[in-house]
Amino acid sequence: MVQARNAAGGLVAQVPTLSQPGPAIPPNAAWMSANSGQPVTVAAKSGGDRWLVIADPETFTGDFGQEQFKGTLVVALDVTNVYDTVGA
Image (cartoon, rainbow, N blue to C red; front, side, top):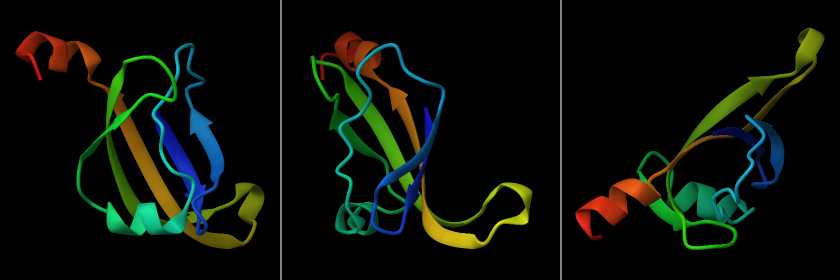
């Protein structure tokens, strides 16, 4: 799963649309800044799944040459099965 977040940490775009609960990533700039560039394991929004998340500051350009904005690129991978296999 890949997300674009604005400077305040709010969700701007996400691909793909998930059929399961996604990662519970706090929607605030402080979390994005504190965890920038390092992998972090977070719980799912609901249920017992776990996600490995990495966030990196980016400058995004809107469609059709719209104004650029600073935010965060977030990449997340469901690692529930991996953690279950290794007993973590």
